[in-house]
Amino acid sequence: MKKELGIVIVYTGNGKGKTTAAMGIAFRAMGYGMKSAMIQFIKGAMCCGELESATIAAPYITLFPMGKGFVNIGKKKISHEEHTKAAQDALKLAREKMLSGKYQIIICDEINNAVKLNLINVQDVLNLISSKPEHVHLILTGRDGDKAIMDAADLVTEMKEIKHPFQNGITAIKGIDF
Image (cartoon, rainbow, N blue to C red; front, side):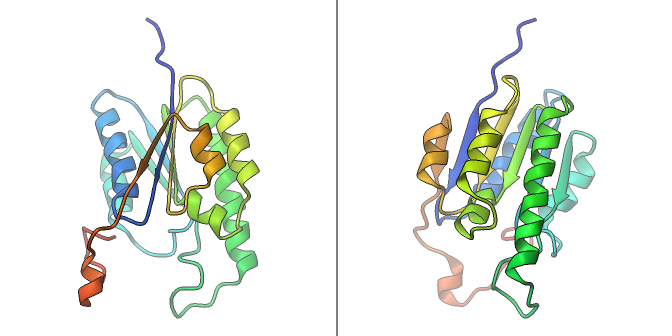
């Protein structure tokens, strides 16, 4: 049987749904017995619905929350160095999982944010893309996708915010936002 070629997908933009779109692919792939690993570059310090879902979907979907939380947001002060170390560790783990042969899909959740916040550099991500085994699908999410990364991808989707409940004072909603 011929192995299908894996592609590089980028979900970016200010609109909601980037992580959800990536998880949707993982759940669809699970229907075919494919395994996915999601490495979270920013999230990690807080509980989120995708972590709970991945627990239920194991062993087909494995989630690795590596981040220290949102940078410069919230009451807990975490240094830029701590965030950088966490993002570097996430990048190392993403490469390890991608090359392990155990997963058909690797999701680097909010890796674009990590680049924009100077936690990792663009070249690190381009190196990850270029070292991708040909049968693995690599999904990169997060706002502010870098042009070089988007140019290296096979599929780029920009989520555009038209309206958001936060504009009307509605805070993050369990099951919708986290």
